[in-house]
Amino acid sequence: MDPPTILALKQAFLERTTRQLSQPLAPSSAWRRKNDLRGSDRGGAAAAAAEHDRLPPRAVDDALVRANQLLQQHVRRVYAPPALRHVAEQLDQLYHDEPIGRNDGVTDYSSAETIKDLLPAWEDAAEAEALPLEARRYTDLVEQLQSLSAQRTEVHARVQRLRDMALLLGGLGGTAEAPTVQDNLVTRDGPVERELERMRLLLVRVGDKVANLPERPYQAHQTPVGMDVDDADVMDVEVVGQKRVRALLEQY
Image (cartoon, rainbow, N blue to C red; front, side, top):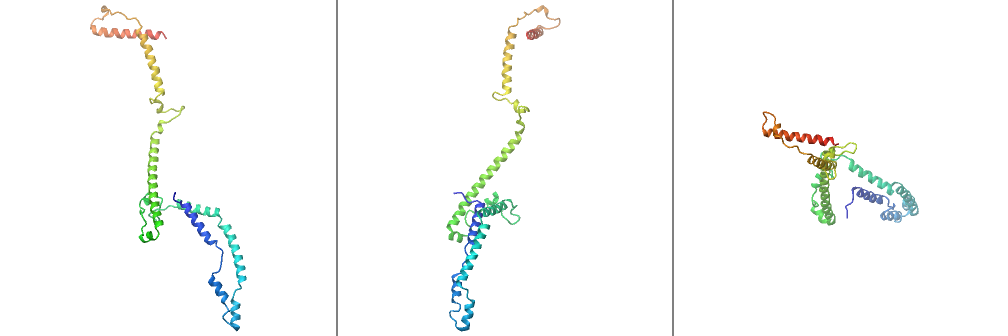
């Protein structure tokens, strides 16, 4: 069973208090007995004076009926359930909104530090022995409260980590109208992968075209004066490559 909230506790307190204030008015039995005995043990003028001080029971009952009617009207008008709920909500809101802390003499029981410092058991041993159920309930509530506080701390830390991560990765977002660096990352079926596939097919086609071009035989007498044979071979290969590229480009 979940522990009651602050709002539920305050509303229950208001309901108990209003029930006490809503009880019908009635004189005590001691007052009625004293009122009935007035003048009964006296005689003469003293008895007449005491009888004059005595309130007639019928008049007392009529006054009580009228007073209780007014009381019930007041209770229905002032202590209606919606009004009690509204007052409880106001108290609960004030409890959460009021700036409280250790420095001003008021303890904030919603803070993690205060919850951590709560005693694990009822401090007064005599009261704990006299009220075992309340003492046990206090221990259970402290354990549950500290467990929930630890979970809240972990959640706050995780939220902060996610916010920091979102801040760092904010520049990697973007839209189709305003792409960012994310579009340049190599991902499966991404734009870079599609472009690499096109380049691979183009290289295959270019390679086939170059391989099918006619090769020019090497002519030793064309070696320029003062150039070694190895240098001439390198120059001949470059010339052949340039001619093949020009021939390939002329086909498009």
